[in-house]
Length: 126
Image 1 (cartoon, one colour):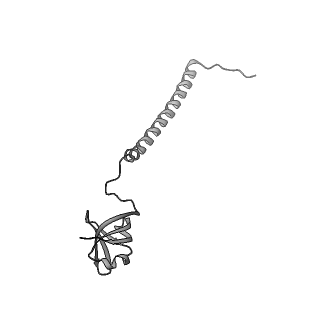
Image 2 (cartoon, rainbow, N blue to C red):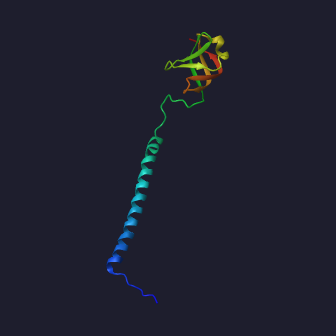
Image 3 (cartoon, rainbow, N blue to C red):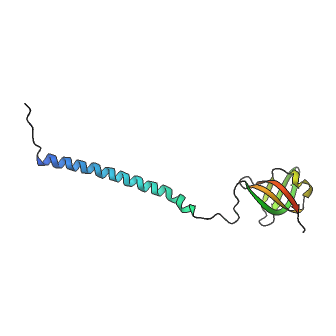
């Protein structure tokens, strides 16, 4: 026959404290995880509302721009009127007959490579 022993008040209190300590650790861990995720996502949320710069061009955007066609050797470049930015021309054939002329072009712009792909060319009057 087995004799059941009753727990004394000290053992019961120790078990309750141990349970409280586990719950406290789990809560602290959850709070730290939540705070860490909030801090990591804050920079992205802060920059999401900032509008792009005025003269910012998306990669591969098609745009009409005015400027002058320049050539050095076999390399053809396009210099814009507004900011004087120099663009390397990916397909120089449409601009070959317009060297040192003021023109308006329609092109896809690739700012990361400072290059553009010309679609149409229109000579402008000086």
